[in-house]
Structure formats: structure tokens, C-alpha cells
Amino acid sequence: MAVVTIVGAGVIGLSWARLFGQAGWEVRISDPRPDLKDVVDQHLGGLSVSTSHDLAEAAPGADFVQECGPERIELKEELFGILALNTGSGVVLASSSSSLLPSAIAKGNPVAERILVGHPFNPPELMPLVEVVPGPDTAERTVDRAVEVYRALGKTPIRLKKEVPGFVGNRLQKVFNDQAMYLVQQGVIDVADMDELVRASLGLRWATVGPFESGVLGGGPGGMRHLVEHVGSQMTFDIGTPDPDDLGETLDQVEQAYGTGKEAYERLVKIRDDRTRAILKPLGWPSGPSAGK
Ligand SMILES: NC(=O)c1ccc[n+]([C@@H]2O[C@H](COP(=O)([O-])OP(=O)(O)OC[C@H]3O[C@@H](n4cnc5c(N)ncnc54)[C@H](O)[C@@H]3O)[C@@H](O)[C@H]2O)c1
Image (cartoon, rainbow, N blue to C red):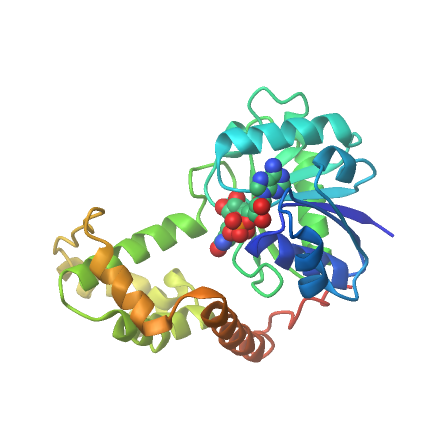
């Protein structure tokens, strides 16, 4: 049985662990959190999973490592230092980081050629994409192996040609979310209506076609060239940026709309996951974590 070491048992680590476990991997999960065993029992019951508070104990013998610790560069450097000392040659060391450069994570690491970012979208067990981001020192065989493993898990790995902070998905998301925040701050729209507006338009559209293909369709038989010249050329307005010191009122609105705490979180996760599962298959994506077994 192939062995994966998952570093960090938070939102992302637990979801990766379920995906690997359901695809038939033996999972070792490492996290200093005192409730690690309880959390694993609650979320990963029935799978082949062992736990450890010590990464140096969970890493030896791994065939693949997926790091999902906190998004702090000093900590990632430290974790990858431990992984370098405790994993065999040829083992891919992938970070789930949302925006940190693989070159920063691998700085000074003796096995930089084995390090890359394998950035999932939340939750990794359902969202098809994994952005595979090599640093300048990442070996081609490391990228190939990561792509092979993610594909076998039923994911859609997309390999970036070079590293860039935030990669592609989160750069797009940042522009979009900044503008959503700005429009709420400016009193143009409320939080709940913004979410409904996106679900009823861009969310649905982008689940079926990407921005360029959508541009082709928006231009009719004249294609994207016509759209750019005809509609795009008039969109010359300044879009503004949100005030980072004035987030309070918007965050209050978000909490009023969706609630806070464990109960609200679990209710929202269920709604999101049920909806996601319902559309994966009709849209042609593998329909669950056991895909790729
Ligand atoms: N949350 C998201 O939407 C999302 C999406 C994609 C990628 N990511 C990335 O995934 C990673 C994890 O994010 P998350 O949202 O799961 O965070 P989280 O806060 O839910 O979980 C982080 C876990 O790491 C553990 N941890 C702390 N120190 C550790 C150590 N020394 N060794 C091992 N584990 C340690 C914590 O106890 C915690 O359980 C981050 O790099 C983040 O950028 C997050």
C-alpha cells in the first residue's frame, strides 16, 4: 500500500487525507494539535490512518508528502527541513500553500529539487483542480510524479510554466474578492445579494466555460475579437480598491448572513459539498473522492 504523509490536520489536511485514504493510500497525519486523535476519528473513520505529533516520526517511509500546515514561511521552511532529513530520495514534497513561492519554501533546503507547490482548491477532496507550481530548482521528474499522483487521485492537475506569488487561481480570486468587498463597502450591494448575484451569473457561467471561451461566445459569430472591440472597449471606468481598514461592517454583515462557529460551519460545508457533488458529474468531472482508485 502506498503511503502518504499529510502535514497538518486542519481544513485542508483532513480533506486531502480523506481523498488519499479513500483512493487506497495508507495515510500518516502529523499535527501538534492535542485533539489530533479525536479529530481523525471524527473525520477519517474507517480509513487506514495513523497519527503523530512529531513529523520526524510520520515522514520516514512516505511515498508522497502533502504539507498543509499554517501559511507562515518560517514554519514551512522548518517543516520542509524536517522532511528533507526524513524522506527517501525521489519522494515528492508538495506544499498546499495558497500563495507562497516554492522557491521561498525550498530556500536553503538540501532537497529543493523534490519540493513544489501542489495547491488545491478547498475542499481538495471535491474540487478537481490542483495547481502544480515548480520553483526554479524543482526537478522535472518531481513535477511529473506530482502530476501522476494527483491524476491518479482523480484530480485535474495544471502545471504552471513558472512560479508567481498567489499562482493563478488565487491571483484571479484576489482581484474578484477585492472588488466584491469594495462594492459592499461602497454601499452598492449587500453581502447576501452579492453571493446570490455571483451564483446566478459568473459562478454558473465559469462552471461551464472559462473566461476566454466565454469571450468567444459573448462576441457571437464575430468571436472574442468583436466582443473586445465592441463591448470591452467601453469598459474604461476605474474599478477602485477596498479600504483594508474598514472591513468591520462588511464582516458583520457576513456573520449576520451566515452565522459563526462550529454549527454554522458544518451546516455550510454540507450545503456546499452537496451542491458541488450534484454538479461534478454532469459537468464531466470525477464525482467524488474515490475517483481514481
Ligand atoms: N483554507 C483554504 O481555503 C485553503 C485552500 C488551499 C490551500 N490552503 C493552504 O493549505 C494550508 C493549510 O491551510 P488550512 O486552511 O488547512 O489551515 P488550518 O489552520 O485549518 O490548519 C493548519 C493545521 O496545521 C497545524 N499545525 C500547526 N503547526 C504545525 C506543525 N509544526 N506541524 C504540523 N502541523 C502543524 C495546525 O494545528 C492546524 O491543524 C495553508 O498553507 C493554506 O494556505 C488553504
